[in-house]
Image 1: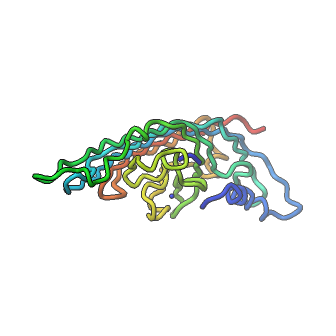
Image 2 (image 1 turned 135 degrees about the horizontal axis):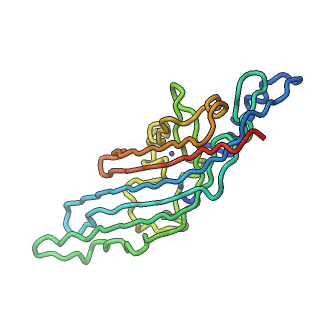
Image 3 (image 1 turned 60 degrees about the vertical axis):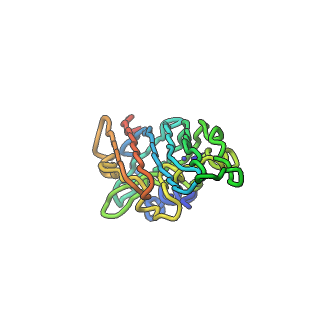
Length: 238
Protein backbone atom coordinates (compact mmCIF):
# COMPACT_ATOMS: atom_id res chain seq x y z
CA UNK A 1 0.00 0.00 0.00
CA UNK A 2 2.90 2.30 -0.30
CA UNK A 3 1.15 4.73 -2.60
CA UNK A 4 -2.22 1.52 0.57
CA UNK A 5 -7.87 -2.02 -7.04
CA UNK A 6 -5.63 3.88 -12.38
CA UNK A 7 -7.36 6.79 -10.70
CA UNK A 8 -5.11 9.88 -10.76
CA UNK A 9 -4.96 13.12 -8.79
CA UNK A 10 -5.73 14.91 -12.05
CA UNK A 11 -8.96 12.97 -12.33
CA UNK A 12 -9.89 14.05 -8.81
CA UNK A 13 -9.29 17.67 -9.66
CA UNK A 14 -11.39 17.34 -12.79
CA UNK A 15 -14.24 15.87 -10.78
CA UNK A 16 -14.09 18.66 -8.21
CA UNK A 17 -14.15 21.34 -10.90
CA UNK A 18 -16.69 19.81 -13.26
CA UNK A 19 -19.65 21.61 -11.69
CA UNK A 20 -17.83 24.93 -11.73
CA UNK A 21 -16.93 24.59 -15.41
CA UNK A 22 -20.56 23.99 -16.26
CA UNK A 23 -21.60 27.37 -14.82
CA UNK A 24 -22.25 30.40 -17.06
CA UNK A 25 -19.38 32.84 -17.26
CA UNK A 26 -21.42 35.53 -15.50
CA UNK A 27 -22.41 33.23 -12.63
CA UNK A 28 -20.71 33.68 -9.28
CA UNK A 29 -20.19 31.16 -6.53
CA UNK A 30 -22.17 31.50 -3.35
CA UNK A 31 -20.26 29.89 -0.50
CA UNK A 32 -22.59 27.79 1.63
CA UNK A 33 -20.39 25.82 4.02
CA UNK A 34 -16.87 24.82 4.94
CA UNK A 35 -16.11 21.35 6.29
CA UNK A 36 -13.05 19.41 7.35
CA UNK A 37 -12.88 15.64 6.93
CA UNK A 38 -10.60 12.91 8.32
CA UNK A 39 -10.34 9.18 7.75
CA UNK A 40 -8.98 6.23 9.73
CA UNK A 41 -9.22 2.51 9.15
CA UNK A 42 -7.72 -0.95 9.19
CA UNK A 43 -7.57 -4.17 7.24
CA UNK A 44 -6.83 -7.77 8.19
CA UNK A 45 -6.31 -10.37 5.49
CA UNK A 46 -6.03 -13.96 6.80
CA UNK A 47 -4.88 -16.45 4.18
CA UNK A 48 -4.13 -20.17 3.85
CA UNK A 49 -1.97 -21.77 1.15
CA UNK A 50 -2.07 -25.51 1.65
CA UNK A 51 0.11 -27.84 -0.41
CA UNK A 52 -0.13 -31.57 0.45
CA UNK A 53 3.00 -32.56 -1.45
CA UNK A 54 6.11 -33.69 0.45
CA UNK A 55 8.70 -31.01 1.17
CA UNK A 56 6.50 -28.17 -0.11
CA UNK A 57 5.78 -25.02 1.89
CA UNK A 58 2.29 -25.15 3.37
CA UNK A 59 0.31 -23.16 5.93
CA UNK A 60 -1.10 -19.70 6.40
CA UNK A 61 -0.43 -16.13 7.37
CA UNK A 62 -1.90 -12.66 7.45
CA UNK A 63 -1.57 -9.05 6.37
CA UNK A 64 -2.69 -6.31 8.76
CA UNK A 65 -2.63 -2.55 8.34
CA UNK A 66 -3.77 0.53 10.26
CA UNK A 67 -3.90 4.05 8.85
CA UNK A 68 -5.20 7.59 9.42
CA UNK A 69 -5.25 10.94 7.66
CA UNK A 70 -2.03 12.91 7.72
CA UNK A 71 -4.13 16.09 8.06
CA UNK A 72 -7.82 17.05 7.68
CA UNK A 73 -9.01 17.67 4.15
CA UNK A 74 -10.89 20.93 3.59
CA UNK A 75 -14.20 21.06 1.73
CA UNK A 76 -15.91 24.14 0.30
CA UNK A 77 -19.57 23.67 -0.57
CA UNK A 78 -20.86 26.37 -2.90
CA UNK A 79 -23.70 27.07 -5.32
CA UNK A 80 -22.97 28.34 -8.84
CA UNK A 81 -26.62 28.61 -9.85
CA UNK A 82 -27.04 24.93 -10.64
CA UNK A 83 -27.14 23.63 -7.07
CA UNK A 84 -24.55 22.92 -4.37
CA UNK A 85 -21.27 21.22 -5.21
CA UNK A 86 -17.82 20.47 -3.82
CA UNK A 87 -15.54 23.13 -5.29
CA UNK A 88 -12.29 22.44 -3.47
CA UNK A 89 -11.65 18.79 -2.64
CA UNK A 90 -12.92 15.88 -4.75
CA UNK A 91 -12.81 13.04 -2.21
CA UNK A 92 -9.08 12.31 -1.93
CA UNK A 93 -7.29 11.27 1.27
CA UNK A 94 -3.58 10.95 2.02
CA UNK A 95 -3.05 8.42 4.79
CA UNK A 96 -0.11 7.04 6.74
CA UNK A 97 0.25 4.12 9.10
CA UNK A 98 1.85 0.69 9.19
CA UNK A 99 1.43 -2.63 7.41
CA UNK A 100 2.56 -6.02 8.75
CA UNK A 101 2.97 -9.32 6.96
CA UNK A 102 3.07 -12.68 8.72
CA UNK A 103 4.00 -15.78 6.73
CA UNK A 104 3.76 -18.86 8.96
CA UNK A 105 4.23 -21.55 6.31
CA UNK A 106 6.42 -24.52 7.14
CA UNK A 107 7.95 -27.24 5.00
CA UNK A 108 6.06 -30.51 4.74
CA UNK A 109 7.97 -33.65 5.78
CA UNK A 110 9.58 -35.71 3.02
CA UNK A 111 8.09 -38.87 1.61
CA UNK A 112 9.06 -42.08 3.44
CA UNK A 113 12.66 -42.98 2.73
CA UNK A 114 13.34 -39.65 1.04
CA UNK A 115 14.69 -36.23 2.04
CA UNK A 116 13.98 -32.62 1.09
CA UNK A 117 17.52 -31.83 -0.03
CA UNK A 118 16.47 -31.48 -3.69
CA UNK A 119 13.59 -29.10 -2.88
CA UNK A 120 13.59 -25.37 -2.44
CA UNK A 121 13.64 -24.44 1.25
CA UNK A 122 10.76 -22.69 2.93
CA UNK A 123 10.96 -18.97 2.08
CA UNK A 124 12.66 -16.75 4.62
CA UNK A 125 9.51 -15.49 6.29
CA UNK A 126 11.50 -13.08 8.45
CA UNK A 127 11.49 -10.85 5.36
CA UNK A 128 7.84 -9.93 6.02
CA UNK A 129 7.69 -7.84 9.21
CA UNK A 130 6.23 -4.35 9.63
CA UNK A 131 6.77 -1.41 7.29
CA UNK A 132 5.47 2.15 6.99
CA UNK A 133 2.26 2.64 5.04
CA UNK A 134 1.93 5.66 2.75
CA UNK A 135 -1.17 5.57 0.59
CA UNK A 136 -3.80 7.49 -1.31
CA UNK A 137 -7.51 6.68 -1.11
CA UNK A 138 -10.47 8.35 -2.77
CA UNK A 139 -14.22 8.26 -2.13
CA UNK A 140 -16.02 8.22 -5.48
CA UNK A 141 -19.66 7.94 -6.58
CA UNK A 142 -20.82 4.44 -7.49
CA UNK A 143 -24.17 3.15 -8.74
CA UNK A 144 -27.55 4.44 -7.52
CA UNK A 145 -26.11 7.44 -5.67
CA UNK A 146 -23.85 5.34 -3.43
CA UNK A 147 -20.15 5.90 -2.72
CA UNK A 148 -17.16 3.54 -2.57
CA UNK A 149 -13.59 3.87 -1.35
CA UNK A 150 -11.00 3.24 -4.06
CA UNK A 151 -7.22 3.28 -4.29
CA UNK A 152 -5.76 6.46 -5.72
CA UNK A 153 -3.45 5.22 -8.44
CA UNK A 154 -0.67 2.86 -7.32
CA UNK A 155 -2.05 -0.38 -5.88
CA UNK A 156 1.23 -1.64 -4.47
CA UNK A 157 2.17 -2.00 -0.83
CA UNK A 158 5.36 -1.85 1.19
CA UNK A 159 5.50 -5.64 1.70
CA UNK A 160 6.20 -6.25 -1.99
CA UNK A 161 9.42 -5.43 -3.86
CA UNK A 162 11.28 -3.13 -4.07
CA UNK A 163 10.65 -2.33 -0.39
CA UNK A 164 9.46 -5.80 0.59
CA UNK A 165 10.61 -9.32 -0.15
CA UNK A 166 9.44 -11.82 -2.81
CA UNK A 167 9.76 -14.52 -0.12
CA UNK A 168 6.85 -13.06 1.87
CA UNK A 169 3.55 -14.62 0.81
CA UNK A 170 0.54 -12.28 1.01
CA UNK A 171 -2.29 -14.61 0.01
CA UNK A 172 -3.40 -12.50 -3.00
CA UNK A 173 -3.47 -9.25 -0.99
CA UNK A 174 -2.81 -6.16 -3.09
CA UNK A 175 -3.96 -3.11 -1.09
CA UNK A 176 -6.77 -1.82 1.11
CA UNK A 177 -9.22 -1.23 -1.74
CA UNK A 178 -7.91 -3.82 -4.22
CA UNK A 179 -7.64 -7.16 -2.51
CA UNK A 180 -7.10 -9.64 -5.35
CA UNK A 181 -5.14 -8.77 -8.47
CA UNK A 182 -7.28 -9.18 -11.57
CA UNK A 183 -10.58 -8.68 -9.77
CA UNK A 184 -13.01 -5.90 -10.62
CA UNK A 185 -12.03 -2.65 -8.83
CA UNK A 186 -15.70 -1.73 -8.48
CA UNK A 187 -16.56 -5.04 -6.81
CA UNK A 188 -13.60 -4.85 -4.42
CA UNK A 189 -13.81 -1.16 -3.46
CA UNK A 190 -15.26 -0.68 0.02
CA UNK A 191 -18.90 0.57 0.03
CA UNK A 192 -19.54 3.68 2.15
CA UNK A 193 -23.18 3.68 3.32
CA UNK A 194 -24.36 7.12 4.40
CA UNK A 195 -21.58 9.04 2.67
CA UNK A 196 -22.94 12.62 2.38
CA UNK A 197 -23.76 14.28 -0.91
CA UNK A 198 -22.91 17.92 -1.56
CA UNK A 199 -26.57 18.79 -0.96
CA UNK A 200 -26.45 17.18 2.46
CA UNK A 201 -23.23 19.00 3.35
CA UNK A 202 -24.91 22.24 2.30
CA UNK A 203 -27.83 21.76 4.70
CA UNK A 204 -26.30 19.94 7.67
CA UNK A 205 -24.45 21.36 10.66
CA UNK A 206 -22.28 19.72 13.29
CA UNK A 207 -20.64 16.35 12.56
CA UNK A 208 -21.37 13.52 10.13
CA UNK A 209 -19.73 10.14 10.78
CA UNK A 210 -19.53 7.46 8.06
CA UNK A 211 -18.56 4.00 9.33
CA UNK A 212 -18.12 0.87 7.24
CA UNK A 213 -17.24 -2.68 8.30
CA UNK A 214 -16.93 -5.53 5.82
CA UNK A 215 -15.85 -9.17 6.15
CA UNK A 216 -15.59 -10.98 2.82
CA UNK A 217 -13.80 -13.73 0.88
CA UNK A 218 -12.53 -12.08 -2.28
CA UNK A 219 -10.52 -15.25 -2.95
CA UNK A 220 -11.35 -18.76 -1.76
CA UNK A 221 -8.14 -19.07 0.26
CA UNK A 222 -8.45 -15.89 2.34
CA UNK A 223 -10.86 -13.83 4.44
CA UNK A 224 -10.53 -10.05 4.51
CA UNK A 225 -11.92 -7.73 7.18
CA UNK A 226 -11.89 -4.00 6.42
CA UNK A 227 -13.19 -1.11 8.44
CA UNK A 228 -13.09 2.64 7.95
CA UNK A 229 -14.35 5.73 9.78
CA UNK A 230 -14.75 9.05 8.00
CA UNK A 231 -15.64 12.13 10.05
CA UNK A 232 -17.02 15.32 8.51
CA UNK A 233 -17.04 18.40 10.77
CA UNK A 234 -18.63 21.66 9.72
CA UNK A 235 -16.38 24.62 10.44
CA UNK A 236 -18.54 27.54 9.27
CA UNK A 237 -19.74 29.30 6.13
CA UNK A 238 -16.76 31.59 5.56
